[in-house]
Amino acid sequence: MENSKLLNWFRWLAVAEGISYISFGITMPLKRIYNIPEPNFIVGSIHGALFIAYCVILLVLMINLKCSFKKGIILFIASLIPFGTFWAERKYLREN
Image (cartoon, rainbow, N blue to C red; front, top):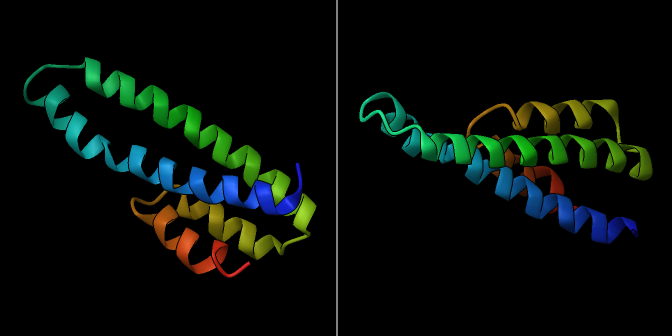
């Protein structure tokens, strides 16, 4: 896959991963307060798959685009912070 297509795919993945992370704000109260664990399990599974895909694609992009280690660390840390991937997509991924 060429780098521009991979970068566009990564941008989409960053937004999807961010949405799945924020979805825990809805499913965690359902699980903890109302004792409905199913939505949290589904969102957790989706989020886990998206997070792993985000990390793998990030590594591939860092190698293919020869980006700095600092930028890779920033993009990785952004995936650990709520709303972080939205910020990273806007600040670091749109400029390319």
